[in-house]
Image (cartoon, rainbow, N blue to C red):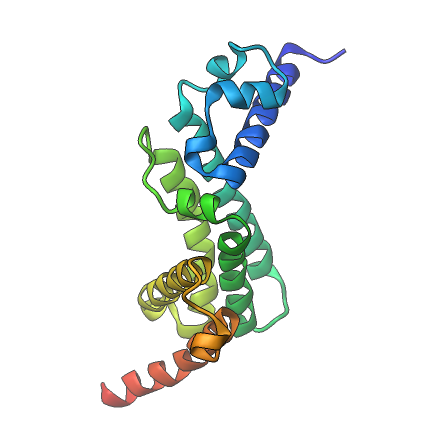
Length: 198
């Protein structure tokens, strides 16, 4: 027999999963507590016992997504192989991959929640810290934030251009993955030129 706590956790899980599916299919407008409850197979009032409103539910999806990415990047960072540049490439393409597969989720992750943003900020911050630790392995602690910001904003731009159809091999003669490789290859050269100029 399952306990009340286990039952509540299973209901919450079913609600978040149903909402994530609706988000993937139609964006935030497709997510309503009524439809989420129907998809999860729970009573009409059940979603309201777990989430104050739709924004709280969308926030939970964004937090889980950032937590998942943070876990992936941490696991990648703690591996012996590949070398830091390879780890960085994997981390960036993993993030871009979310945008390719789930563009509505990607936009949600980078949006400021209408309700309390603190949980999303914490989860995204943890993922960022893991990412910056990989960047620091390649460029050192002093340059990690600046280079990390360059890489993250580039990955965001690559994703947006791919999803909108503006980054195609026909148009630009390259792909998002090739651009990521080029960016990473430029980092040591830029760092070296900064040392020479300074």
